[in-house]
Amino acid sequence: MAKSFIKKGDTVLVITGKDAGKTGKVMEVMPKDGRAVVENINVVTKHQKPKSAQDKGGIIKKAAPMEASNLMVVCPTCGKATRVSRKTVEGANVRVCKKCGASLDKKYVKTVKKEAKKEAKQETVKETSKKEVKDKNVTKKPATQSKVSAQSKTRDNVKTTVRKTVAGGK
Image (cartoon, helix red, strand yellow):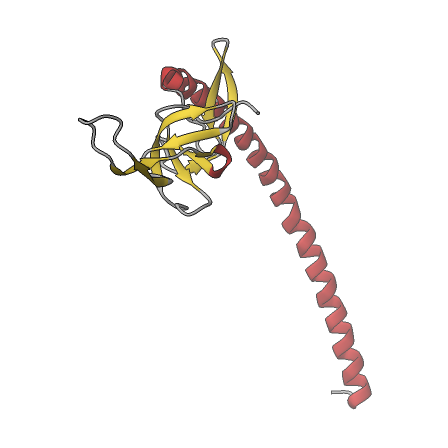
């Protein structure tokens, strides 16, 4: 099975199945089977016999493992269910939120925030340079638009004079 993107202790959202739309905390992960046990999700009833004279039997409710592909990790920063990407930080692969870029691994939250700020600064520099280029283009466009509008005005004048002469010279 593929490498699991869900870890014990994560908050997850169920996207399909009988418990779709519910959120819960991951209690156990089985990466070989591609399954996870989520607290109060996929609850099944088990009829258990007493094993000895002191034990009680009865109907027990417990969370059963469910397919990990039916779960989405909820980002603790933005609070939204998100896909998970991987980023190398300090030589380790860190799980990162696709929506806000925050780290999903508690150990690397601060370092990922610092890197995100650096990237944001670089992006703002790129955007400002793009805006300057657009501003230069915008100043050129009205001049060409005024030429076009002047040409259309002369065409309109020619049409009206032709109509006047045909209509009777007014």
